[in-house]
Image (cartoon, rainbow, N blue to C red):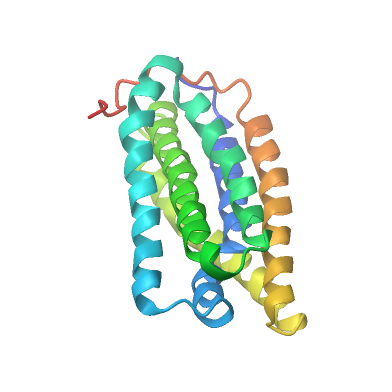
Length: 207
């Protein structure tokens, strides 16, 4: 069954709130790695690859999970995995253990981000009314970029106000984790009663 009129807006609003919360920290991960942790470009490439591998793993494993348990279950993995993903940057690790730890952080981030992105698409496909889907998704992309911009500006304001040093980055990641928690709870509250299907015909098969 499809949700009643007006609930599509609630769903998109919840997704936009979480996008903004993610963007408080996401744009600043790369400069943190290169400028604060001084990772060489070869290690940086490895870390970017770890994110992609994490996302690929999520799409492979969680696609089948979504078919059995529904996209909302996958969404919860993504939402509540991305909260500690921001906090992992606050863990003090130095010396020879730094790169393996960063690889783990990036892989975990890619994994839970993949869960979130997969669930988002499944929910949009299965929840938005057919006659309104194209227009609503188009508006969603527009406002999604706006939410990213707002979150990025907030993160930049925190970073700039605190001096752009290592401690300032820690505040940015911590603020993003707090915002993600609040946005995740808001998203789940807004989507209660939307009648999300438990079995997803669009979910990809596991490899």
